[in-house]
Image (tube, rainbow, N blue to C red):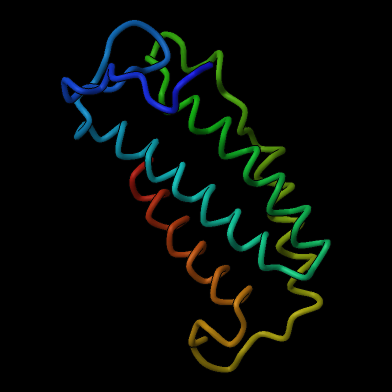
Length: 137
């Protein structure tokens, strides 16, 4: 039986993909944590969504984020081994966004999140995604 904890981080450090450990407050660990939070927020949005098309996009995006988390968590010597996001993945996401924009009328003003549970979850996920982007950059 395995545990949900290792106790290896009790000293205030976290393991990375490669040699060594980093302090839990290190910017790279913050970025990985925020990417993990992004995946969870997208999962909540997916659980509340009633759109099969949106759910397919969200699942694939979550999988892409797991790959990105590995790359960010890797030491510089190992990062290339975990690289999974390339121009084709960005093009895919842009194409999905373009496809959805053809079915959704753009609002004339700012959207107040919360019209529906799924819409509120997507708005929350959007803000977490933006924070993750800032942390990774």
